[in-house]
Image (cartoon, rainbow, N blue to C red; front, side, top):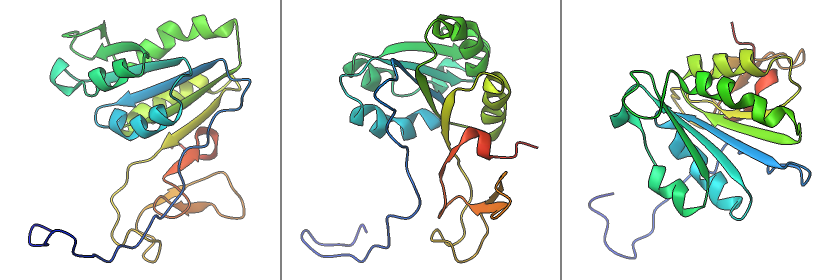
Length: 183
C-alpha cells in the first residue's frame, strides 16, 4: 500500500461477516462495554447512534490502556472508566464496574448492551447478565487465517444445534451473547 500512487485502484474482498444491529426504539439505555482495544470497535456503532443517550464503560489494566475517551465525549456519552490497578477511575475490571452500575438500569429494563474485548471479559459479561434477560451483542476477536470463511480457523462454539460451530469471520464477528458457549 505504501507504494501506491494517488488515484490508483486496489482490489478488496469484503465486507465479510455481520455487524451490530441497532437497538429497538424502546431501548432507553444503550450501554457500550469495551475492554482494551475493544472500545475502538464500538465507536462506529456509537457514531451511528449519535443523539441517543449512551453509557460507555471503558476498561483496561492501567490508565495507559484506556482509549477513545475524547472521541466518546464528543458524542455526549456518559463515560465510566475502570482500571484493574486503580490508576484511573473505578478499581477493578470493566465487568466489576458494570456490576456496580447495573442496579441503575434495573428500574428500566429497556436497554441494550454492546461489547467488545478480551474473551475473559466477555465470559464475565455473560455471567453478569445470564439471568437478566438483557439484549446483548458482542463482537468477538479471533485470529483469522483466510478472513472470508474458507479455512474454518476462527470458529466459535454456539448453542445452535444446526450450526454448533460458527466462523467469526463469516457468521460473526458479532453474535448474541447468549448464543455463544462460554466454556
